[in-house]
Image 1 (spheres, one colour):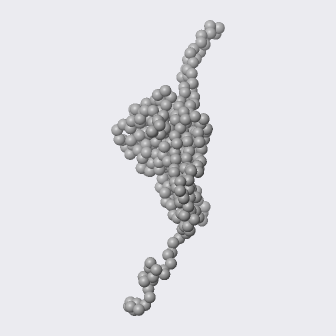
Image 2 (cartoon, rainbow, N blue to C red):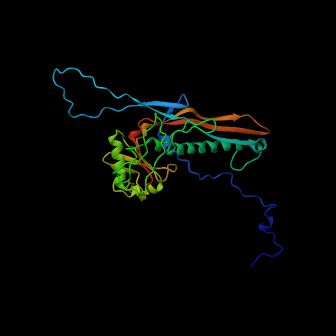
Image 3 (cartoon, rainbow, N blue to C red):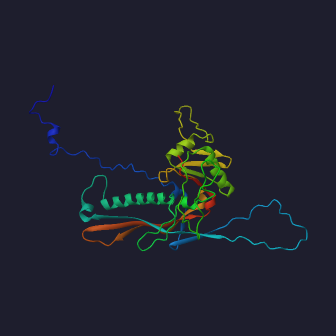
Amino acid sequence: MAATVAASKAYDLAGGALREDLRDIIYDISPMDTIFLTKAGRGTAKSTTHEWLTDTLASVSAKNAAIEGNDFTAVARTLPARLKNYTQISRKDFEVTGTARKVSNAGMRELLAYHTAQASKEIKRDIEAGLLSDEPASAGTSVSARVSAGAEAWIYAPNHINTNGTTTSTTTAPVSGFAVSPVTDGSATAFVETGLQAMLQQAWSMGGETDVILCGPTIYNKISAFTGIATRFRDVGSRQQAQIIGAADVYVSAFGSHNIVLSRWARATTVFALDMSTWEVAYLRPFETIDVAKVGDADRRALLAEYTLVAKAPMANTKATNVS
């Protein structure tokens, strides 16, 4: 059966008397996680060029045996090395008219406040991606921005590990204290467990204590199949439903237990073995919202932060690039 021709139907009300059914909430599925920015230390910069000192102990000598009564002989000591990075300005600009701020909106009280909240999340994601990038440091000019070197640029040979664990790749050491050399990926290679073990061993041999293995989803799934993963079982109560664990959270090696962290913003073909105590983000200008002078009937805001990545001990960390 069908409704009679004379019957009023909801279809007839569309675009007229039918009230819209719009939920008063905005759903946002954009990912927000900023693992590196959260785990790194926080410091303060006082200039657009931020500098710090690093040092290493002399090589171990098992034959450090002195002759009784022998004359004093001074030996030249290695002095601390100075490393440097430039501060980078990350910024989000937006503008809302006076009318747009006053009308009734679905899912928000006020449009300018909504844009401010969204921009603050976006800028943190941008900074996370920059911190993990392979961008070299750049002083910038009046027509180009300063760039803070990312973590990939700071990890250089011999800590740029080939995935088979036998050779090193070619990211070179800092020049005049700056990580300015482009990252050279080398040939694409399948990531294998011996490569990960070589990364952990190299970091340990240089004094690092790897607490985070950071990578994208493809490599994460590969690591989950390695034999060194921690147990996939979790204790549950007698009346609780058991869990099936499909991925590893921790990789256990001869050099400790290492949290496996999934990153959305690192390059998909890069794996990091990180000692997070050796990384810091130093702010020349912490996150701030600036009221920009009005032009016409609109309010303007600039949300920004000026920061740099501090690699306190680059050689405590390792990386493998161009892996799959």
